[in-house]
Image (cartoon, rainbow, N blue to C red; front, side, top):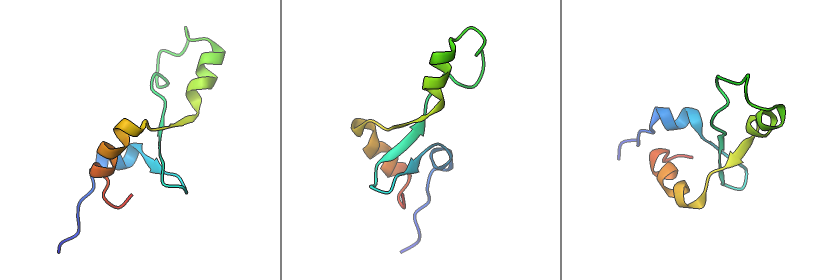
Length: 65
């Protein structure tokens, strides 16, 4: 069997934790930050676990994750 290809766009956006959960970055953190409050910017700075409803779609895009 040939190796399965991963979707490169998804590979750049998602990582797996040690327990197998998938993490992603928050949105709204790239530009137009001046009017956002510092607390909002700090909250958006971290990573978050992908919702379990979306996790199956991400795993389909990344077969070796």
